[in-house]
Image (cartoon, rainbow, N blue to C red):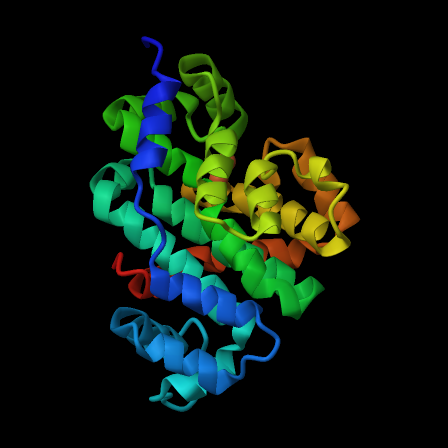
Length: 287
Ligand SMILES: [Fe+2]
Ligand SMILES: [Fe+2]
């Protein structure tokens, strides 16, 4: 394949719209210790699409609450600030890319893979520290956004690279670096910084194939990075129709031992992944 231009990616990144001002207002209110659930609910209520999506999600089988939740106030209390922050950010980013290259991304199973990584990250983290499970979900959902920038820049030429890599992450990074001069982790970090993602999320995107490089961050960021690394593989294996035990990454099994993740949990996540993806797809308007 002829060399694809990195300059093209930079133009695409510069041309992407900023995240909405409503979202930025919401994110800064969520960072503010003084903000209460009522304040957050009021900001969300101004955004009809976000309100509708949050109510749809909180009432979905994915969250599994027994009673119908009909108000944003109630949803904010039930989901918690971390979940609201993660979901609002995830939804905004997904909307920007699905609007532009949904058809092409389907050829790469991009969203199945990203949602699978998000769900697996959330389930793995909920066994380690429930307080961080929504952050793990968002890091899983957005870990590969650099691929979306490549897809926007090169369309079907990038899909060809994906086909060539045959679902192997290492192969993909190698092919990207060779053809474009940068891999999706690097380009993903540029877009994450442009959109002012929290710095820990930027780092997790940058190092999702090399979580050992997160060692200077706090312990939970390191753990989340390791979990996203593992979830990425669980999601790949599921799409390839292979068992988790067939994962070709040695690092995957080393992290499994370090984090003390039991085989039963990994197998349960792997076998329920498609069901979860189908539930969560509706929330992201991909059903
Ligand atoms: Fe990746
Ligand atoms: Fe990935």
